[in-house]
Length: 148
Image 1 (cartoon, rainbow, N blue to C red):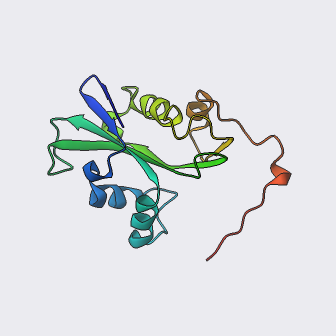
Image 2 (image 1 turned 180 degrees about the vertical axis):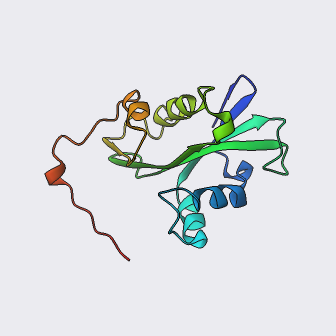
């Protein structure tokens, strides 16, 4: 799928993604800094991806599409979805691109009727609340298994 607005494109076409750029960026984030790059690649390969590109860009890609953002969703497309790895480059912030990225993600036909759509964030609660995300009503019902 593809959405266009004001010289930007959001696409779920994995062929457009600048994988090296995306992996390098995610490896520097607070949530991905301790994840090996091969694991980051694997996580992208096994998800529905949303790449955010500037038309006619190219500084982050040899494909004439300058990548400026990204997110991915892992889902069974019916009962469960997990939103992860959301970013928009610092120099592109303030243009509404993060909001647009969320609008496209939550309205994707494979995701819009998913029963439980999860995410974790340390600092963007206000953004995600605008798209229907809220704190867990009964966090004691949820458990987490963490592998080293």
